[in-house]
Image (cartoon, rainbow, N blue to C red; front, side):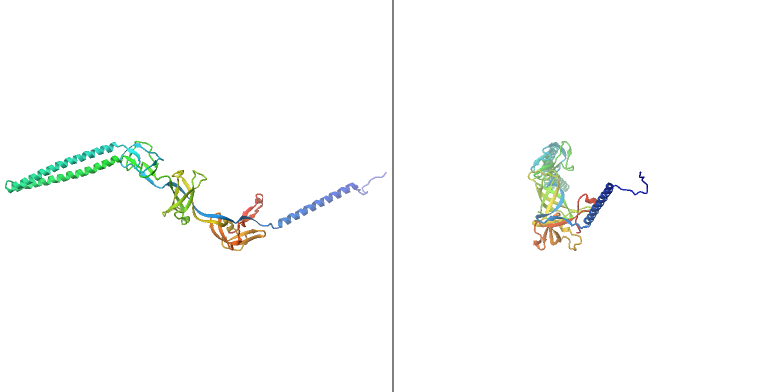
Length: 409
């Protein structure tokens, strides 16, 4: 019998040796694939990525330059109506919002006080007339006495002292007549004032228009020194807009310019207006200087009301059917591009990169700008021009999509 010893060689079975060789080949194949992938990734990472641009097209547009302002609607004219005489309000004939005509009664005051004053003035005139009659009779008697005394003096039947006394009495009688006549003139004036007061117990509208403010209760004492009882405005068919415009923009405005405005009461609806007057009394604040501008707006349907807030856009210039690009295209300049005057060129997006085209910028509305290419044939309608560079940004931005880089101005 054969006995195994440590000195005998270790024998590996053939099937074990075949498994080891397969595992070695698999490991080498996986390592080769990983190495190839790493090489491809490194190559792709280091390969330059073509620059992508955000672009817009050249188009034909109507460019309108506007000045914006905020103001409030009001009637063209306001007139305060106060009580012309002291009295108490006893009758209201109109209310706020009513249309009125010139000289139409608005309210009436208590007429009793004025009636009493009228009767007193009439009595004073009558008493003054009686005093005039008495003074005239006294003057006639004094004149007759003075004449008789003069005849008696000629016959030496009266003394000079008696004649002097007769003449003095005549002068006093004449003075009394003059005083009575003056009193009658004064009382006649008081009578006319009382008669006028009788007519002033009725308050009337001074103009055709609409009642903006009116009292709602009867009884309070009123008079010229009290606040206005009524405020009457001109008709609502034409309204005024009181707006204020910044100092930097007021120079572009002229009377007659077209304007549009909106009010919160009618969202989405636009109304027309025209610049009527540009004020010269500036409103100065710590931040800015603004000038008052008055506009006129037609309101035939009377849907607009005084006091509404108006957001106004005033048209100052317009270019029809102009060749235009977005303002951002005029401000874009690629990196490493040669210096050029601001807003004097745009960059065409072509298959092989960007090409510069010189332009002359015209009227702008803030979003679009009219341009004149130099030469004109270089920018037909539909040409794509660059607005900015699309950049991936940082790793954090990659997950959120590309960003936009406008470039230098």
